[in-house]
Amino acid sequence: MMDSLPQIFAQANLPTQVKVYEVSARDGLQAESLTLPAEVRTQLISRLGGAGLRSIEAGSFVSPKAVPQMADTRAVLDELDLGTGISYPVLTPNRRGLDDAMAAGAKDIAVFVSVTESFSRANLGDGLEVTTARNLDVATAATKAGMRARGYLSMVFGDPWEGPVDPQRVVTAAQQLLAAGCSSISLGDTIGTATPGHVSVVLQALIDSGIPVEAIALHTHNTYGQALANVYAALQLGVSEFDASAGGVGGCPFAGSATGNLATEDLLWMLDGLGISTGVDVRAVAETSQWLSQQLGKPLASATSAAIVNQ
Ligand code: HMG
Ligand code: MG
Image (cartoon, rainbow, N blue to C red; front, side, top):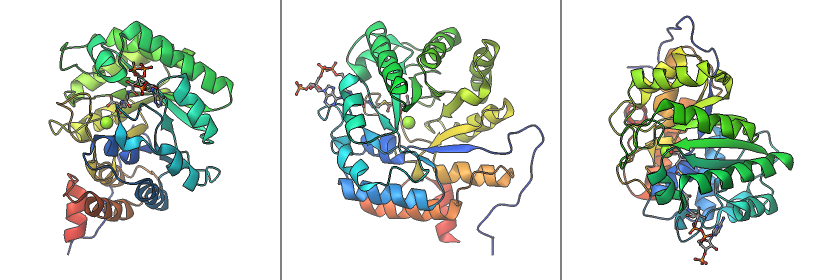
């Protein structure tokens, strides 16, 4: 019988430690047609914390008309212990979102900026210049108030309306977010079109511009089955923060061609096999995904979860 953990074959020149940034309770559930009640989302977050995850996105303070699945994020934060050493970032698209996040006691926020005009309009309701300025203002205000801010960049590796994206646009946007106080920049392969060579080129452009590799995170989608290969390419350049979603739940409500996020347990299985420490128990995440699958009433996409459960 197979052991339920992979054998370890460490590789030279890869990070020895990786931060897994868990997005299922926000990015995952915002794309589901079934809206899970706040108490079930809180349970999900608690289970993920129990599995060892230390950065768990808890929801978003956005328009409830745009994203009804996250409408009661305040109720989720009310149930979480915000002082335990686990961070529970929430998305804040404007000053109102930031004010609501502060009132709820959030210590971590994330702003999100598109690198393309079309997705800015689809996701944020206005052009690139306006939405970028708005998000930079939110990041500046949050960090001045002593909160931690993360910056997401969307459509970094291609846009369904505009096609290829110039890496220099990514560099400029990342520099703006860092200058506004963001501590890390998550590069969103929103529609999952990146391949490993492409990831290396964009990362190299960021590193060559002077952005510290420690400030870079990668947010992959498995639309074309490339998510883990893309993570491996990023590991080779020293990236040590990766976004993932239990069970691979997710997509994007504002880009129809976006399918599932990289599943957390698939990421963990690879990192465990490489001997890279994460502090997260892959089996506990797989069990949580099975539980989440029951809550959503549908099977989830993670290969590792299915394999562990069938062992
Ligand atoms: P807008 O329509 O341009 O702005 O929306 P508005 O100021 O005209 O407001 C429209 C309505 O939203 C108004 O309500 C506001 O009160 C309300 P109404 O008068 O119609 O009843 N509103 C709010 N309500 C609650 N909280 C707020 C808030 N702000 C306005 N903070 C806005 C602009 C950005 C607000 C809107 O389009 C929105 O909320 N969109 C949702 C964006 C979103 O959450 N997208 C998903 C996250 S991004 C993502 O998933 C990608 C990522 O994971 C990485 C990747 O790329 O893969 C990050
Ligand atoms: Mg995503």
